[in-house]
Length: 203
Image (cartoon, rainbow, N blue to C red):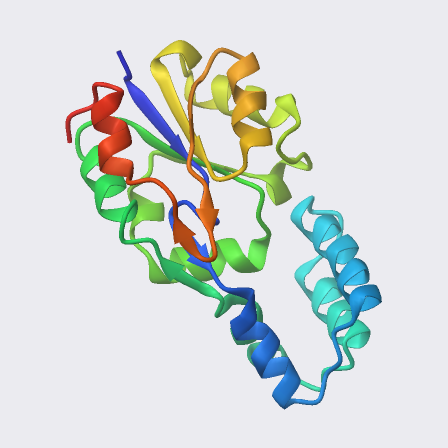
């Protein structure tokens, strides 16, 4: 019996396309080589762990890629990669009307605020655990333990859904029922409705 649901954000509730940002940067004459990408990944990890502020991330990231843009332009580039996953969001909203739905995501303040402004499902969820607020990221077990205690979850009666298998594997070690929801070339490989039906969940 599944009594509660925990959703990841990126590539589960919201698909993202990094090429949207890359195309804009190319038009602006920014060169994104491997070194840039590695530097940006390191900066982003710090931001998603809450170790640097939004302002620090903005100033550092635009310096790495030599982008001359004000904050609002940068925010649109950084956040404009997302679009709603029509396979999962309608189901998540229907689930939220009848059972507890929570969010557990490795994310940063800018993305969390952007998505909350535009998509009501985040306000319909009963609670959220974000890496930038907790200082820990999946697949570390501690972030799952935070969710268990904060939301009084019974892992064996809770389904955790994530696009990264390393994360669902970590959740499974704590007793969660899990669903690996892979995305390939920007498209979900599975149909969530079919997977929920297979697990005995009727929505």
